Image 1 (cartoon, rainbow, N blue to C red):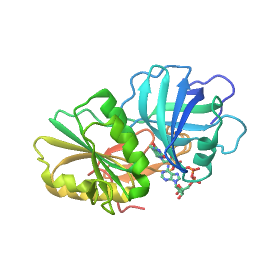
Image 2 (image 1 turned 45 degrees about the vertical axis):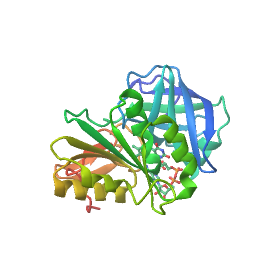
Image 3 (image 1 turned 60 degrees about the vertical axis):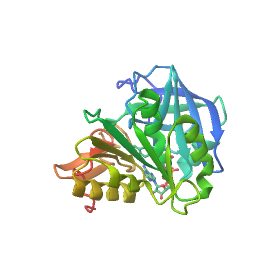
Length: 259
Ligand SMILES: Cc1cc2nc3c(=O)[nH]c(=O)nc-3n(C[C@H](O)[C@H](O)[C@H](O)COP(=O)(O)OP(=O)(O)OC[C@H]3O[C@@H](n4cnc5c(N)ncnc54)[C@H](O)[C@@H]3O)c2cc1C
Ligand code: FES
């Protein structure tokens, strides 16, 4: 991402790392102070973020926006590799380079109840959804007890959160797909964000039960603006770009087994 010279898109800006809250060695909540105010961000929209100093890593990393207030936005960073480690270790007050908000976000629904299914840090867009509209039912699944700090942090923000863990030590034993059994296709809609395996399973169950479901895909990204073809996914309508056509797609649109 180029940070020098005028930005013809108006989407690039330097931001300040205003606060960092640790939920463990590999999980952080970062608050970023933006110079240019964002308009209202749609849950599911994301930013590309990179350290502003030097060219390593060259490319920004995508993060869903989980909170927005005034000229501050919040993201959850799970350390996965070098880019996320550098961002998580950045000193408070440092300038970071941000591109966004990007992508489409989850569509507003005319159905009466939205059920948000999250796998671990896939909770990010649903924190924003709850901040904007208190109506949705939110289901968070985590692998096990190690994720207790995230579950506690989210529980403080989402009243009535439904929790699931594979080992049964936090909330219900199992995963958020358990809630699909009780849904009514006439009145319920599903939004899902998390690992690809979970999204694929949501798509299979919702397809079978004719429940309308939207999924937020995680692909690798480079430009975030449709220019590099680095994020293409196969759909029933041909190849689409996760950064500009998504990241949110109708679950039945995605060809899950295409390479
Ligand atoms: C739209 C979108 C929203 C996202 N929101 C969040 C979020 O809110 N919080 C969060 O912690 N992470 C989020 N991610 C994933 C995050 O962008 C990746 O974990 C990050 O780019 C990894 O960078 P890295 O340099 O640390 O890892 P790398 O060293 O590049 O890779 C480390 C590991 O992570 C995998 N990986 C790399 N890029 C991605 C990617 N884009 N998606 C999934 N796996 C990847 C690699 O295959 C490898 O196994 C999001 C991704 C997308 C596309
Ligand atoms: S990341 Fe470049 S086209 Fe999507």
